[in-house]
Image 1 (tube, rainbow, N blue to C red):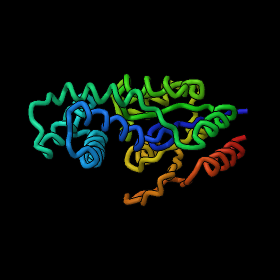
Image 2 (spheres, rainbow, N blue to C red):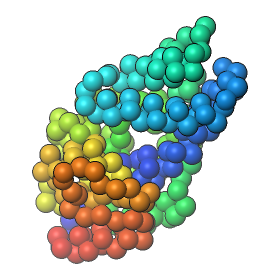
Image 3 (cartoon, rainbow, N blue to C red):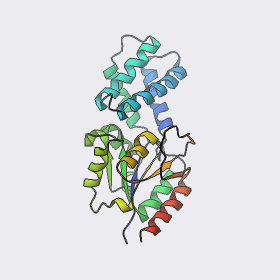
Image 4 (cartoon, rainbow, N blue to C red):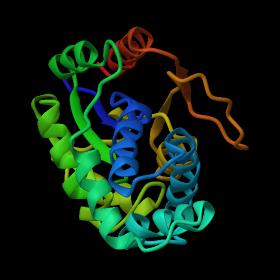
Amino acid sequence: MDKLIVLMDADDTFLDFGKCERYAIAEVADIIGVAEKDKFCDTYHIVNDNVWKEFEQGLVTADEIAYKRFDRIFDMFGITGQDSHEIGRIYKDCLSKQAILFDGARECLQELSEKYRLFVITNGITYTQQRRFQKAELNQYFERIFVSEQIGYRKPQKEFFDYVRGHIEGFDDSRAVVVGDSMTSDIQGGLGAGLMTIWFNLLGRQNKQNYCADFEVKGYEELEHLLEKLQNQIK
């Protein structure tokens, strides 16, 4: 039987990036000695999200992400005397130690890995993502992890998905599906590459784009049922 090929995003799909980020940036705030720690963490989340959106659009490089977000937040808080490149390195190390899964994620990955061919497709820093996957013992569920920094292209670029296609033995568009939480990287990228898409909307976000995924699910059980249905259609 030909198995479904499932290309899964990582952060906010099975890794709880909100919590991981919060713990990591709180550690950085302690190192810097920020007085308004909660405000600093909240502001960082907004700034970081904006920088990653700029990365998706090709406005900043992967290397620039690490320090530009701190350049901006330091300006906003009037923080001086800090090297944004060094703080970026420290944050990367702090984040690499954070690998918190959503409730039910591990059980779902175990179930899916026994039925389908699973691969990770993630925009991120190779060092950080690899350490987080090792810490959470996630590698056992996936045949391969594709990281944008390593590939040289990013989601939603078609070149990213073309690279993935070319490096999965037996890849077949008719039995491949992209699963992810981001409309602007996972879903836009999957649609642009001519692949079936599932918006994994665990966090209950609104779709503000002028396009839609082929399917939307709001939890792991719903995802399992949908993938089973899709698998049966290709038998």
